[in-house]
Structure formats: C-alpha cells, structure tokens
Image (cartoon, rainbow, N blue to C red; front, top):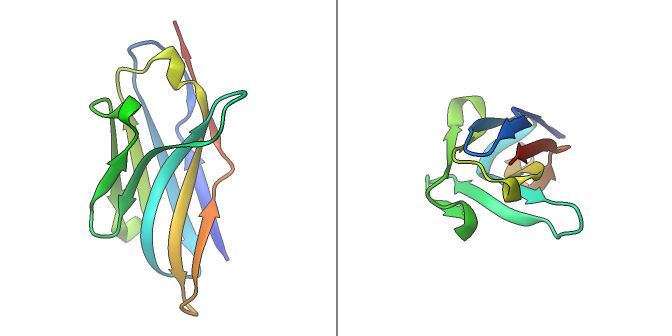
Length: 120
C-alpha cells in the first residue's frame, strides 16, 4: 500500500506563486512517474504536469512557461512550482504516482487533493 501526502495549496493573488509537494511512501520498489492533475468546478480532471523516471516531462499547454515540475528521487517526492498564477488556475490539484510495488506489480495512486485558489 502506498500513501501520498500533498501540501502547498492555498490562496494567492494573480501573478503570485505557490509550490506544491507530493511525497509517496509505502511498499514502493520503483516509481515510474509522478505528476499533478487538476479539476475545477464543473470541469473534467486534466493533466497539469508529469515527470517520468528518466526525467522527461509533460506539461499542459496552458501552464507551459509558468509551471515547473521536479522530483527528488531519494525522497520519492515531486514538486510543482507554479509562477505567474492566473484565476483560471483555480482548482483542486491532485497528485498521481505510477509505481511498481515491492511485489513487482504496477499500480497508480491518487492523492486526496489540495485546493489552489487564485484571486484576481
């Protein structure tokens, strides 16, 4: 069983910055990738950014140039640095991890979500 602990959400004014963290713990043999998704009221959950084990990344077009995802492999932790935030970035942000367990099965887990609110 793997647990994800998210932190760093909050309320910020447009143009401001926030940094989200997601720490994975439990029966992890290896992590294939970690990332962030978000869901605004009345909208579908969408990919924000994802980082793979080799270091390659994917970003939503709407956040390219403003958000940066990084990972500390030793701590099984991913970070999302969000700069130049806009009101349309307001959503619940969910961490997701794709991992191989100690029994060598592949799973994905989701975090509980953290609220990010950007005021205009």
